[in-house]
Amino acid sequence: MNNNKCLPHTPPDIRHRIRELAYFHMIHESDLVCRQSTRIDRGTFAILCHLLRNVVGLSSTEIVDVEEMVAMFLHVLAHDVKNRVIQREFVRSGETVSRHFNIVFLVVLRLYEELIKRPVPVTSNCNDQRWKCFENCLGALDETYIKVNVPAGDRPTFKTRKGEIVTNVLGVCDTKGDFVYVLAGWEESAADSRILRDAISRENGLQVPKDITSL
Figure 1 (cartoon, rainbow, N blue to C red):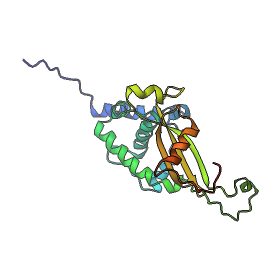
Figure 2: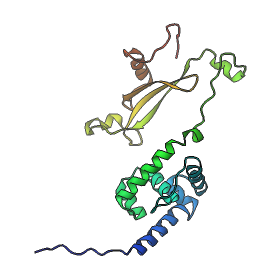
Figure 3: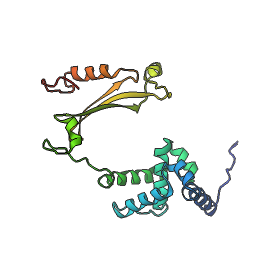
Figure 4: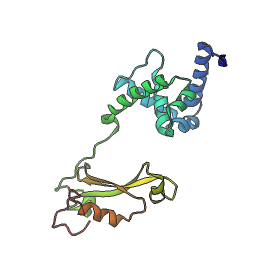
C-alpha cells in the first residue's frame, strides 16, 4: 500500500509573486534591511550592478535578472550560508541558485582592475618627507587571522577570544606592495616572535639579507 501523500503545489504565478515580495523587501525596502542582507546599502548595490552590467557584461538570464542574482551572491558571502538557505530566501531551485552564483562569481573576478587600486612603488630617490622614516626599508610584514576547520581536539588551541577558529597567518610584502612570502598554520595563541623565527629558520623560508640587523 502506498502511504505517500500528495504535497500541495504552489502555482507558478503565486511563487513568482512571493519571490518578488521577498526580493523587494531584502534589497529595496531600506538601507538597513539591504545592509543586513548583503552588507552594502541600496546605493552601493545599484553601483555594483551597474559595474557588472556595463564593465564586464553581466546580463539577465531567462529566469533571473541581474539584481536578483547579485543579491543571491552577496547574501551567500555576507552570511556564509548553504544553497538550501538561498533556495528558501529567494524561492528558487538549488540548480538555479548554484548556476547564477557561479555566473556572478566569474564576472566579479573580472572587476578587479576597477575595484583594486595597485599601490604606487616608492623609489629610492623619493623626496616625500614621510618616506624618510622608512629609508632602506625592504618591505612590510604583518599577521592576520583566517578562519579554518580543524579537528575537534585542536579547536581550543586555534580559538580566539571571540570564539572563532582561526589560523595565524604571516604575510610579507616588498616595497611595491606585492606579497613575497606567506606562512600559515600557526595557532592563534602563538607569539609573533615565535612565528617570525619559524619563518626565517625554514629551509625555504623568509629570506632576509645578512646585513639586515633588525625587522
